[in-house]
Image 1 (cartoon, rainbow, N blue to C red):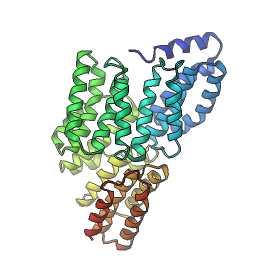
Image 2: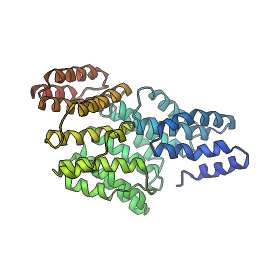
Image 3: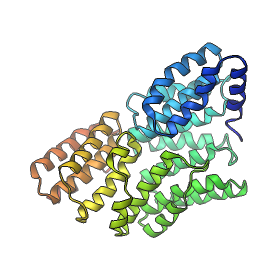
Image 4: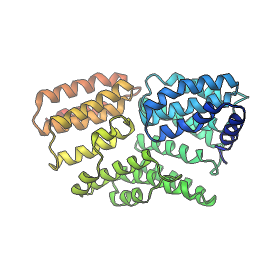
Amino acid sequence: MDIWKWVNDIHDSLRDAGEDRLAYLLFEIPNQVCRNNHEHVDALIPEALALSKKTGNTWLEIFFRHWNLQSRLFHRYEPINLLSEAVSLLEFSHREENKQCPQSICVVQDFAKCYALLDGPGYFSERIDVLKETFHRINSKWPCFFCLTGEYVDALCDIGNFNEALSFLDKQNAELILVNDKGAQNELCYNYAKVFFNLGQYDEAYKYVKKSKFRNGDQKDFREKKIILSALILAKLNRFSESKQKLLKFDKIKKTHEHFMFWAQTRYELAINDIIPFDLELNNQFQFMVDKLSNNGVIRESINIALLQGELLIKNNELKAFERCCNYIEYLMPKLRKPLDAYDKLNSLRLKL
């Protein structure tokens, strides 16, 4: 299934009709999203939507709204004001006149991701239900099969079902082998690496992250994700010098919030093992991530980074800062859809003092 065929076809039609600017935006916006040039995306989206509506082609509107959510959810982690847009787009894309649009499947991924960011474990059932339903509409020949597989695996990992996630990956990978989709198999290695990491099988995780490749050649965002996860796994393998050398500088990741969790975990491993100092600069970087994520509505991930920060503050005997950190975590708790084990984690942190 070529979900880009209609895009290529309409691009040519727009050019023939003299709509050169809209034709240009069809490829420019996805390109800028994948390059993490999100301020540029923000500047282009309103124009693209306005030009799309003039044509009366609702598939174009779905396409651009989808890529806007890709930028703001998958890269910048901004779900707080986007749930209504994700729900609205899901409804719009599944209307009778739109449901054959290939990007109506992509919109399901956007919807699931929005819930994942707001509170992954808290919205587990909603995520799994919509993904299961959508798998019935496609097969492994769709590129969306890979994307939805990633969302499904992440949902299972969010509730700690790592072995089930691994079994699901094996099942999906077998489907990709049957259709000879080597590109998706290569990229699926990144998902395998995350699951093996969560299982504590760090050698296996490192093997898979090294094998992982973006299915359509090189891509900046995937390259950065791979580098950061590699650095984290190396730290867990006590290969601290390699981890420190590989990890990207904070300025390289501060505008791409999807990188925050693994970056913070890597810095934590290096600092807790006295490879780097937990100094004012690193503490400020942790606080920046905690604040940015909580302001964006990514509450559980913000809490998890703050918990790492709290452990490092204890190590440095920064007792007043530690108490402020704990108080802020407690302030965030009611914003979770379901607290689950969050209060237990905070209590365990306070007992370490």
